[in-house]
Length: 308
Image 1: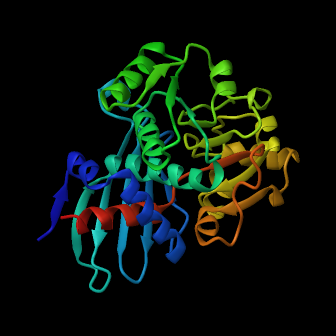
Image 2: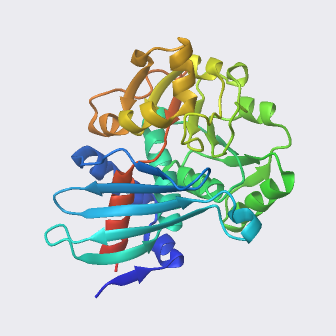
Image 3: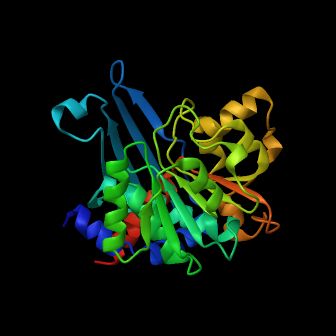
């Protein structure tokens, strides 16, 4: 019987540490993952199709992006995941797509930080106060026992305070950062989850040894850091195919010649397999750019269903 997993069921099934381990196995094993299909539905509305399949599983995420939804009192992004039987193609489950995306995105960032952040990192800064922000903080804390505090910064201080309070309610030592530059300078991991189209974090602020985790931008026109930050960093991506097609944070400095293709040294599968190195020194600045991959959705959906 086809089963629907609501958001609370998806969140309950996807413990961050357990999901990160499942993602590590999935990236190591690999799968067939076409670059996401984007269909224009008029001037601004979009339909995204994100299929992926392996020998064991098959699924697709359906995503709509409707910028006018704010005026309707509905979220801009809506999503649902369809998991199918790999052998027969029969539908097995429908899952809340937003919950799945929040959990897998946060867990993938924390997994990448395992290879790219300093082992003694203590301060985490989350830039942004959207729905993903608290999940990033929770995932990093779940995978990194060395963390001692989390700062939250957003253009809207009230939203930042809401996120910080939610994290404190989860027993995380969170507080609002009033100013971005000093918070960046003080932090060992800077995790950005914004929809910025112009850089908000600048390379001049970044101290040696910092790890930049960029997950907000997912189009060529979206940017969270400036070219100086990218030029100073050892760069890894979730997938070459996705990042080189969609990541404005990398495409702009590549186009200007600030960095070359060789500056992007690894994708997450290579870090997991050990075929490419992550951090190579304590003073190195590292950068992980994620635009999302359907491999993560497939892995997370299968884990939810296996969990019952």
